[in-house]
Length: 460
Length: 157
Image (cartoon, rainbow over all chains, first blue to last red):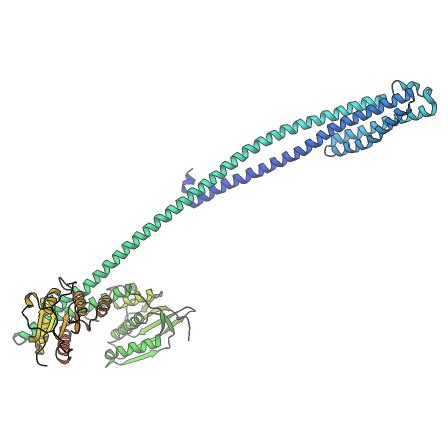
């Protein structure tokens, strides 16, 4: 039984159903066969009964023929001859019936054949005696008159007919026994079949009931989890609201009072004290930026998304226009390949390009000439892979998995400023569009950032 | 303009209030500013009751409202102002730390005239407060004072 416990529920159910089904099929087949036997037996029984009856008739007819021919031989009374002929006329028909009724059993058929020959011989003997009587009168048949013609044949015929009768009765009895047995087994099998069907129905009910209960349980659980999730989401919203509102106030105060102090006591402070004050406001600003970025990141995850056709070419133009202050005084060589229209949220996708292009500008700041290239890596039937490449400081490929993580930075803050949220935002936005992000690069060999987006449906 | 209308600043945080005052001082409009520490005080001022029962009659030039305040919060104050026929003409500027979309849309739906997010950086903050004070308190021409028929308090307060 150990193998059984290792089976999965589905397998057990399948095997159980298979067994019960096979049982029902076998029972049905046996019942069908039994019923067929019963029908066949009843047909054969009818035949046997007819045979037995016919044997009686044949015996009677032969008896009448024998006695009336003998009476005619003795008396010469024509009326006996008439009744003799009437009986004899019927005999061939009887024999034909007899042959028909025994056509399915070889031994009985053989007996009938023998019987036919004997009867023919008897009738021929009788006919000869009658002809003799007519031709030569009583004297011609005196030696036959008392015993009648063909005495031996009559005995043989009687014996044969008894045998035929006995054999038929025996077959009949055997069939009755067989029918009774087959009826009994059919009843038993039908009972078993009914039981199996009940079993099948019961297990189907149990399974369905189990399934329905399970589904209801899962639905309830899903609902309660959904409610929990909603509550958690609300809490998160309240949290980020609180962060947005309450965390910024003290930062504002730090920066504000540092500025007021610097203004009020600026003349009496030495350079060191001024630097301290600057550091205080610098840190406050940095934390303010961090909070703002974090809020944007959190909002990107929750905010409802639009699904419209966005022209990436157009989008990049507006992004570059917005970044024009950052571009001042920089030597930049742009390589812009034409980009397709995609399906997505314009504001979110704008954020993607702002972050990627700002990154490219930031990490190429140490280069005499920044080279930034934007184009299509591959374009499939339903989506497009866009890349943003720069000739900046790049990164070590062994840290590539950390690039898109929240607060993950590959550079010290004194090398390149940043909060470590930009690329996390890019990834979140692209994921929400059903795309993916990845990057390639090498230390001091520039970096290439890739992302995929679904293409706009109408490519106009 | 015969009488100089005051600027009402509703700010529960004394430091924020001080910083705002410092900003106003730079433009010499600080003496016009009345600071309320919560929403209830704002309503007391507007309806001339409580500590303000003896103040000179008349609406302020502008109300700067913080969203999060004890007792009565900024949105409730805004709702009361905008549903009172006498207070309705007062320009209300939401001055808050919250950049949340729901606060923005609720404020505008209730009839706020402007929504300003307090910048973290002091210089930006000072510029923002200064410009707001100058625009709403000096440059903006307030609606003419109608027949003074205030005095009844809405049931909701």
